[in-house]
Length: 334
Image (tube, rainbow, N blue to C red):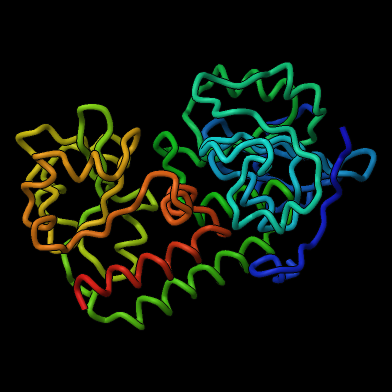
């Protein structure tokens, strides 16, 4: 397996020009300047993590967490191994179309949707210097197994499973790779783009909204802590009050048939999971909502680029979501 050197990419956000020991001392935590260290991540679910400088000078990164690979690419680092959570496929190197230019012709080992766990032997074979698992489930046994292979970076303490905010994820990955300034620049650029779009659409301010889905026989709404709601809030929308009255599980509220009315906001963004869009639209409970009957809903097709970018919530996908979603929302509430 060819080890890919850290490289500064040349397009979009990337034009910003931009082992074994996991626990570091409090004195070194957060400085990234310990002797022989590439980077230090002071706060993870399992304590501080120190990443030594690779002995051969070539950094080998395995990106396992949701969108960790795209975050690394946004920082100019190409992983040698990638978890394909959204099913982009090996031919796409396990990342979205918005990240293909950053991948270039790199050879990347792609691990198919690892909902059942990771292939530790395959990860070991890649001989990583650092493993990124910053948007994932909290699993101490998993951490121990991975940390035996290389220093492994999880989300900060107190983060819900798969609930790492995109900017926190960038900060964690950047700290691990010794690229804190580059990470801050990526965050600032994406935040500015969101702020610019929000300023261009004052009609969004104060409008109640939901981002909801149907999967299996269940319905649900995303809440604070998930990008699919957090972006809406950043654009000026307010969470529909009935959603806030329900008990959340992490960043998600599951709705019974009797609670479906919580989705009846002034505006909605709906997308199916495991269904076609036509099947979701044909659902009688979904169809009973005023927000649907009065055409105040943005429908996102499963597998469409905008839908995948919305779910990826990486610094490379967010610009696609901000522009594409804002245009459709404006047609509803403008």
